[in-house]
Length: 458
Ligand code: FAD
Ligand code: FSA
Image 1 (cartoon, rainbow, N blue to C red):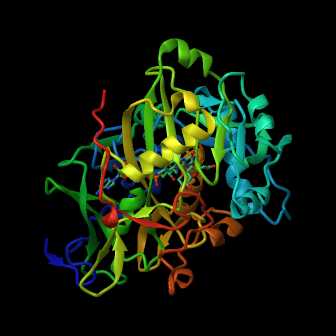
Image 2: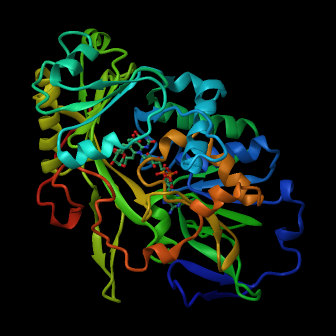
């Protein structure tokens, strides 16, 4: 076997001479399939492959499961249900995705126990934020909240004691709420394992350092991936589901912008946690959101809303590129914004110490549609990326769409929306706020952050 360094991505790919006994000749269901990334989408894909009868599926992840850096490794995420669309619905693609996750949370025993149907309130106070939320098609019964008093009445008394200045919004009382994200992720992984999928996690044996490409086939196809321990994992198909880190393995032609958001927890007493049980999700497009405290540790997670942080590094070619990194702290400016949200809503909690915080990475496409497609130059490489800061809710079902694409069965309208589309990114404005509001109303740069929190995890 000969291994040459690839000229395209010298450090991230390697060329391998493949012989005729390659795994490619094995029937599809028994053929080795490698998934890179055991986060939200990788876990969902593994589960759907196993359920469709694939018997040789391996998932590699840089962390033991559930990955500490997966965007899905979180106490909660927002979910909203949608009915299946009519064939001629102009929003057919998006609604099909949402109808599928709806079925998953309503009926799939792997996910159903983790969904909390408490309703959600989407709100804003800036003209742009209000216009944005007003455009959303929410489905179901929605009540308008026109002033702070309407918000207070949507909650048990004594909770929303803050001024909620200028807040207006929409309250979807049912068919919306939150999912215990980490538990849903672990549930998907556990079920996939039970059905025979192998998960390999850890910095040495699970962390992919490069993709492996054939040197003697045209086109130069992918043949597997190499992990940090030097192990080469060969496969017939490779599914890249490494979230924000996918961008480091290939030239995505600017289609992915790794972007991070910020979250913190405060600890409540068991009695308080009980009083704050079953609250609707309260999301404000100008300031952030929170969801009731979790049952186990009684921690309330709060996110400040903003267009995101990138970590801009200028490469030798003069192009800047956002490069993810892990940190279980947040910028102090973000911590202040989180306290600002608490002061506006629940000032009684605004000065509590934080018990946990982290930055959390995702990757935005230009139009914030997903990117689920074969790579045009590497026919056995399927990309399952571009969750665009809204991909957790799809955990029950996204893997089904990814496997549809793998099998060439994806609905053509969906396939068109989630295709490889570098033409969209040619003149990409990296600083585009992508329809997000809040914070400084611009994309921020971690390189310019001077001060970080120093939270001791309890
Ligand atoms: P991830 O879940 O991040 O998975 C990527 C995996 O790749 C990780 O497990 C990682 O360890 C692994 N990996 C990375 N590098 C390597 C490597 N070299 N080798 C092997 N493995 C590697 N969505 C919602 O629907 N509702 C919400 O309320 C919501 N809230 C959010 C709040 C925040 C703060 C953030 C940041 C995102 C939120 N999202 C939400 C978005 C959602 O979490 C993501 O879109 C989704 O989890 C992305 O899934 P993924 O599988 O693409 O990435
Ligand atoms: O309704 C939703 O799916 C909220 S996603 C939560 C969030 O924090 C966004 O508010 C943020 O803009 C980014 O997309 C990360 O996820």
